[in-house]
Amino acid sequence: MNEVSPRPIAEIASYHAHIYYAGQPERQQAEWLRLRIGERFRVRLGATSRSVRTSRPCTRSPSRPGFFATLVPWLMLNHGGLSILIHPNTTNPKRDHLIDPIWTGRPLGVKGDMLGEDDEAEAALEVNTEPTLGA
Image (cartoon, rainbow, N blue to C red; front, side, top):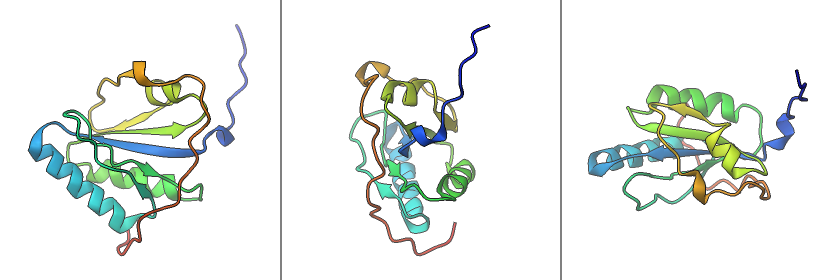
């Protein structure tokens, strides 16, 4: 048996959450969810994709205690039937999206051919929300 050393948590520079939708009703649900996230969490909300299958209100966390432990359970309870891919940002985006993510809602196929295998980890960007409500 080949023994492999565990990977250190320090590999994770930040996290992304991708909210997927199909069609206008789901897009409205994704936009509603994005607004609720911004009201409750200090995160960086990315732009909503115009592609048919995915909305990418990406949330990028500053590395601070409690972020993952509060946002992810909130998403689990409030995803409204949408599929959400939550992945770490390390130096391997392909592995981050295809091998190391967690899903809330129904898991979907991810197009890995557009992802690199050896990049610089995407650091947490400055937050662009000012929460007014508690989780």
